Amino acid sequence: MTDRYTKAIEQLGSDKGMEVRIGGIYALERIARDSARDHPTIMEVLAAFIRDHSREEWPPAEDGAEPPEQTTRPDVQAAATVIGRRTIRHDSQPVDLESADLTRANLRGANLSGANLSGATFTRADLTDTLLTGATFTSANLSGANLSGATMPVQRATFNNANLSGADLGGGVRFNDALLSYADLSGANLRYADLHGAFINDATFTRADLGDADLTEAKTRDADFSGARLSGVRWSSNTRVPPGWRRDADSGRLRRAAGDSGDAAAE
Image 1 (cartoon, rainbow, N blue to C red):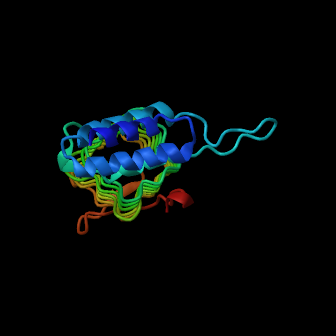
Image 2 (image 1 turned 135 degrees about the horizontal axis):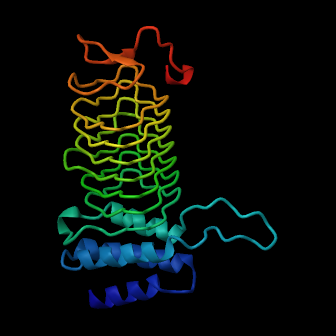
Image 3 (image 1 turned 135 degrees about the vertical axis):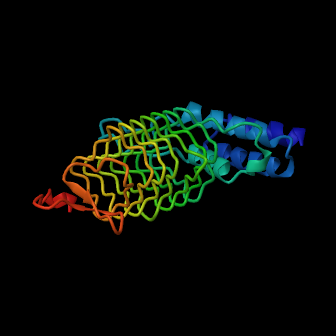
């Protein structure tokens, strides 16, 4: 096992090509599966690799050519994939991906439960069906990311100051009891999202689509819903309704206030 680990680490640090490093990453994954004792160390090594190399320009720009659109480097993507399918019960501490750049990364179905993703960049990343229970996204950038079907249940994922502007959060994303204070969700798709009991004080929902979302018991003090689509949103009777909207007493859902035609985009 020691020999396998040593060889895999050498491959991970190799300058002989992308394929060699990717081979080392998957060799480390096999060792982690074979040895629960080595699992935490290997995940820390892979997380460090992502933090150290994810912000390197990829693909590299050619001389005199227009800079190409930034994406996740293949070996960094491989390391993120391995972390996303690790055996959670063997973790000794949360995976630390603070400030990692996973722009346009494919993390579909990944298990990032409990991960520290503070300051990380997930611009236009695919986080469809990702498990984010208890993950921390403080000051993370998820603009344009796809979180459709992602799960962030009662264990309170933290999105304080996160940028989710333009993110696709449709398909019933569960934010119940999540911490979204000061988060920027401008233009985000939150249709049918579950925000029951979420802390969204001072959050920005400018022109976001929250149609038919559940905000019962949500803490919405000073939240900005300017131009947001709130038709059909489930709203608590003891919470102040956003300007231009009214709460239907029978259904508990928001409707446009009488005499307020509203913004066409908000309807």
